[in-house]
Image (cartoon, rainbow, N blue to C red; front, side, top):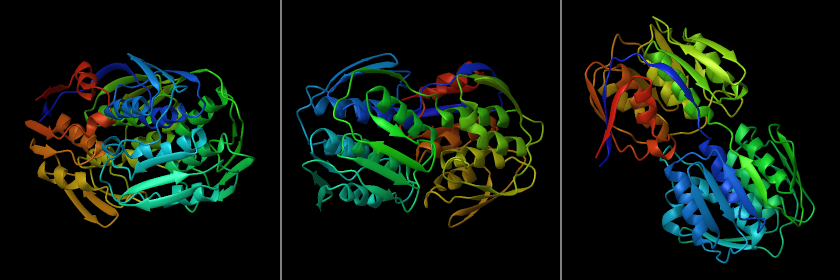
Length: 417
């Protein structure tokens, strides 16, 4: 079983560029099946989830060339409607293939998706919207069988600005008959990236980044080249690593607007951050300040995917901090692992109270999910002694060679089997 071994105490310094965003590349790869066209996608991160999506595309009959950070997908030969259960169960994002496949073939069979265990992430919003667009969906024995002659445009009011549901409706709407309007749509940057890819291919999507998205159905798609936006959560994780180690790091290839909420909270904690174009300089303070209240919210609020990393920072802050997790129910699993390292954290449902301690100490820990695993790595960077992080396959779902990135910045971290 692979694990990270970290000897704490090193101050991180140096410069790096941020790779493509996991949460942008997966829906775009799903979208490649729609048009029967050739898509050349660049700035792709080398992640487990990307490999799983590649396997799904191959299983569906697409031809895929994958070299370095470029993937070329030709979906013209697509000839299957069953998405393999073992692949779907490994990756929650696979649910967005529902909208994409209905656009292409009018039929798809897939199982309920898997991924990190961070509480229920119901797909009811997806199913209701797709049904509103005319599809019949049979649910039995953990599988979904979706069929439609042709999807029809609809006005859809989301009860919650779900990223996945917003993406699924866009993918279903691009070839639907008529116009689809999504109200209370998610506003994340990754949805803007999906819109940009689709429009290059000939779709007519507008409004991404706002709460109302309009999709006019089209019949034809063309070949397309597209570069994935940089990963704001990887950037936020490295920013926090600089902060917690008292480091000095320059981060390039980052869209500053995408990380403004992270910058604001880190500055509140005393971190010094300078921005310039698509770069920033992050310097950790001598003393980390506590944060009175950090609440996760849909974009442009503070991202739930950065909550665990911020919790690690606050374990060594002066004073008491409160975190309110409003997006996912079961997202404090890292708290008990941090407590093994000496952190003083009390959780009450969706609220965590963190009382800063003078230092953390190394321990054997287990990553329970993707971002919680990253939080344990950050803790290991400053803990006295040696920290071992097990089940790092969770971490590798969202970070490309995190140990190598941190090594280059001066961390004493190794990956072993």
